[in-house]
Length: 153
Image 1 (cartoon, rainbow, N blue to C red):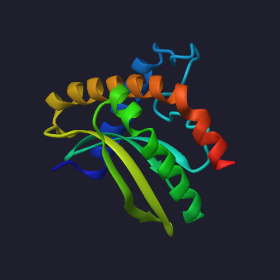
Image 2: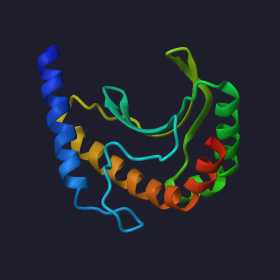
Image 3: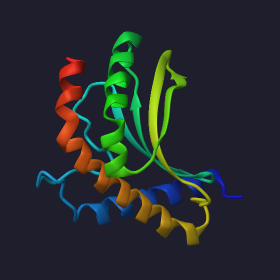
């Protein structure tokens, strides 16, 4: 079992290395992008990367204060589901994933199972998965983000 300090060092090393590798890639629109903190350009929509002992995930979290706005954004995403999944691959869709700071959170997630972030031999598969999904997601998102931006305003 790793200590808290060892887990922190491992996280820092992994994500810093991933950030440096991804810096070489530009968004489909030709711009440099911070892939680790992918800009959704929509208030209360977050693109998250996760890796832990249970797998790796690329997630879209919708968590506005107003639940009716969350519902509208979720409905629009579900209308784009076929296009999104054709570009990025099958995803897990959960309209009520959890409550965070009193807000309902809706989540779309692409997951890589059967890997453990804390096993060195799995980290290359995790990086490859996250890189691939981010690039595929970017192609979709750059095409359709304006729809979500207009809804959130």
